[in-house]
Image (tube, rainbow, N blue to C red):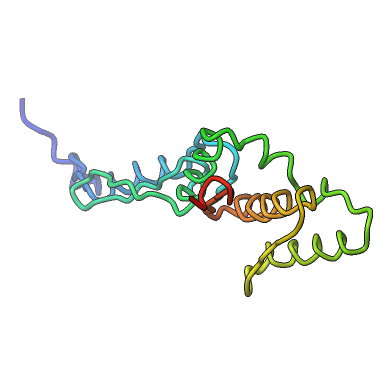
Length: 157
């Protein structure tokens, strides 16, 4: 049987395969899917932790998202037993019965927003140093940034 020539009707009988276009299609489909990571909402990777990039041969490469550094920080805190500390020690929960406590909380909140300059908290046991430092770390984690939590008594030695 003879093959029908569809080109005379303006039709192509055999479409050509473009591996690069196929790779872009696969990468686009992957990048539009939702991931399963929680804790930090990342619109860039849609909570997958990476994005797909198409290659010319039709395959895909995966690039780690910037949010993963912050996610790893949060996971380390969780493994170290600090998950509840980070959850509970917030600026909102810091009790201010004295004017100086309001002032130091406000300064710590401002530092947590901008990270300009230094933040040094000194004082007696129970004055709120750990609470406020933890609240600063929490605010940065919620912005998708990595932090390092180092209790003085554990790391000074």
